[in-house]
Length: 339
Image (tube, rainbow, N blue to C red; front, side, top):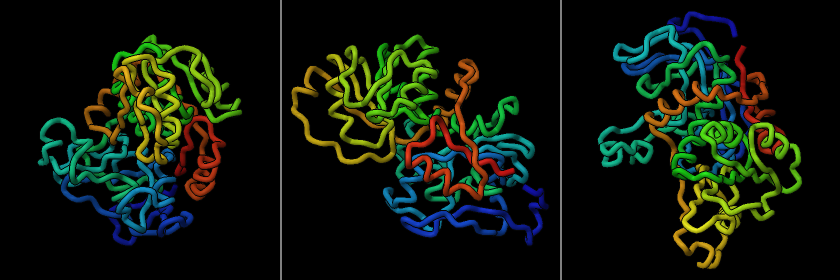
């Protein structure tokens, strides 16, 4: 990426934009935006590609701000800052899913900003990181160490954060089943093993590549999702967007266990007999993240020495990255690299 004078009103940047529902990304040139009072302008080095980006492309989320530039796992350098920015120019930052909250509703007031009535999200309500430059509210950015390559930091900002919150909602579960072994699963398996938990990985039937990948990440067992768990689970973490996995995971639980659904979108959950839920089993969902989650997870990630597996693409190849993600052709995380 050629460096430009970001203060020059004639300067432009590349973006990969979604024009409307179901359409392909289009390469466009746009003026470089200027930061507002709390904002920073970030020169993006790398941006992870997430299944949520597919949900946006497929119009599976409400009130998408078409046209939209996807991307909410962005890493880059602050090159301009508003007068009230809390992050100085020159800082490497990570930009995650949560773009901003109202700070005034009952959820914000009680430490649950992930449920804010007026929350906005990057790559969904505001333009995201599939671009050379991105605006972000400095109060919702995470300063990052320059010791870790930017592309390897991107998965921590969504897959890692959502996986972290999903694991925390499972409580002190010792034996964990993970359903859908993709970007979030491969990171949180490393965290779970660091915490001396046992991990059973469930993948698409016949996906031996994902099963081998799960074992390399530290899973104690890996097999097809239709197989019964080899031992009763304390908790089940579901990252695949398949609602049919919920009744299956319930049957794999021991009494008092919890199923935690970690995705923002899932197909309908089929009906199941009450006996599968009885004996104080629970089903709960994960909604977004808080900044507190982000700071706690980044500190934990430094201790764990998480090693994300990534597959890199150029910005112009973003459609290929989305296609490969949709086809299940990626173990780990797809990452767009801007240079």
